[in-house]
Length: 280
Image (cartoon, rainbow, N blue to C red; front, side, top):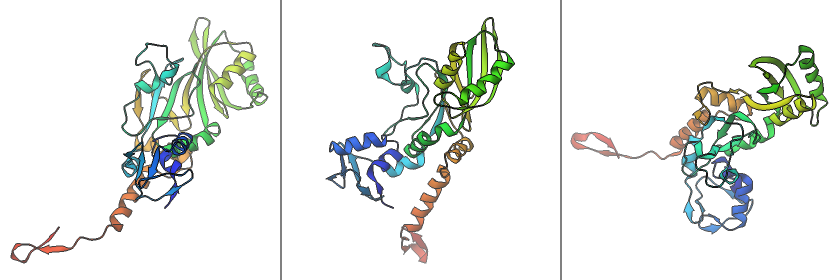
């Protein structure tokens, strides 16, 4: 089935659609040896190259990965946001190395926040997440200064619906702490960490930490230390794709292999010694 070139590149995790469009416009991409056109459709057997280097996209699609990463509050995502001279201090530098693909964040955290980050090599999953992220239920723990009464916690639910933009607090509870520092645990929808931070600041709290603990069906693994990552299991990946309304990637890859075998021409048999038959 023919698909738009920029979608093919994004789905393989080579680049975002916007980056792919920029490369095509700059003449860096060719299809079957000819300069690609923006919006051009390509078939599975077309030869695509970037800067003269051919891409083997058929190998990338079945190997799409999803992983969780435990990000420290304030940790730079990309190298251009790190201080000059620092090495190995950014999120991307701590993720597993890839060849021919790159990690794409699903609903990235604000620079000041920490906790659960989810990355994938599947551009289609990334694009769908950008549309549905606010629809999914997320979990956060927030460290504030001072105690919060039950009445005030309940009041926060009403304040959230009047916020700009409005969001929903499904559940909020005190989660312990030491001294003046107290933790509040939230379950929210249509909200990011900055929305919770702004809400609590407006309510008179001092906010010192915002950590995400859940994104849709994915929860932070306590065994993953800060600065470390873990690939999701097949069952966990299935849950992520289902939450995004996308087909199971493992079943899709299995079907592609089955279709490829079915379409391949059968090889003729040849006679071996003593009348036996051998396949070439």
